[in-house]
Image (cartoon, rainbow over all chains, first blue to last red; front, side, top):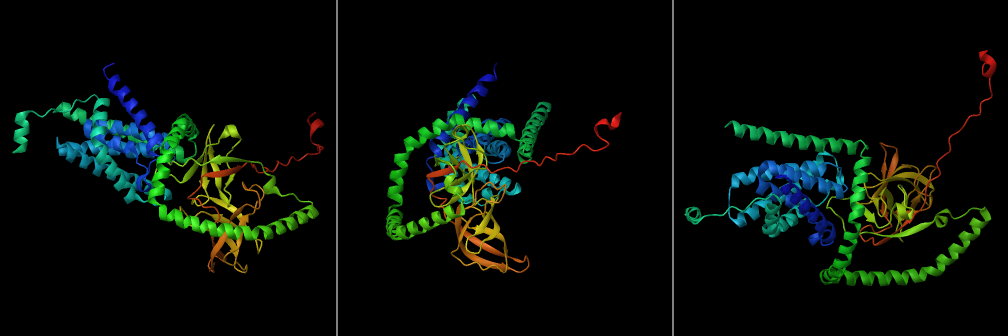
Length: 177
Length: 298
């Protein structure tokens, strides 16, 4: 019963993200790019929850994407599982960095996630994936991830029931120099 | 130390399980046995249909205003071009009317009927909201309940757009004719030569193959569907015009490039032709009972 909390909350967050994607973001396309909130969620899930939770959370995001997008079923599941796990590994290297550094890392990882998706499309010989303007998609989605990071991080912490690490005065002073 | 190693093992196990699941789903989908997966996807999209429509209704005015501000110059240029085309069209109406009368008379003489015009059709709205940057199809707001079936041709006012690839209760997905997987039998109107058209990818022209080297093909010629027996398209649907012809001596055929008549980037409304090709009936051989049949056993 103790683990049903994060599971139910994560499911609720995913449903919310899908509704926002379908109802709002698919209609607003800056520079002709559809911003995919599920990629950003997978990245932040990995950064907040670590590699293991990131992989599972990314898998959830991938499955949700597979259910609404007409790419080969399982492709998003595969890519976002890896994205979540890699985000966790990289976040462990970064440690508890400043908020802006975390947002920048999330943006970079989101761009990497788009690149990984394109690589998967290339491996599966999907012309419509490889011929898409990958660089533009990566840049716009990364910018969106950077801007939305504080909100998404808070939502993911709520879903995974992870309290923000409170930096004590002494710790803060020692970090500052 | 042992706990850490255990955690690491559990992580790899979890990751491996997820990756294997994803690969299994990909394999199922690639082998075409993803019926359940497609049904699940169709059901989810049907459930989300009202959300999409509501989002379109809410964001429509904002998008239109933004487009008006950002692409004002383009709109002005389009307007000027359309005015020119309108004047040209008005001038040709009389000529077309005359030709149409001649055509109807000839059809009446031949006892033939105009098949394309006789096909019932329904108008559908294109859902102008792709859910991904990597989709190659368009979605319509009409589905199985409206009579739409897999394989039905879809056209705009200008020409063929593609064919229905997937249908759920309230919506359908259309494979555009520019898709690399798209192919159809076509006829070059002037010469009457038949070929096979295939998509060249997004925003690219189409390519017609199997046109003999001896056939004279001139840029600007009209290309229509040939409607061979069993084809998903009826004969006579306008596809586009020839833009380039390159003889390929190695293959012993010409490579004909065709520009689609329909503007696939600005589709708002389309028509689904409720056309289902006649499937040839199986030939039943009525055998005469032979001398060794029937009473031969006794």
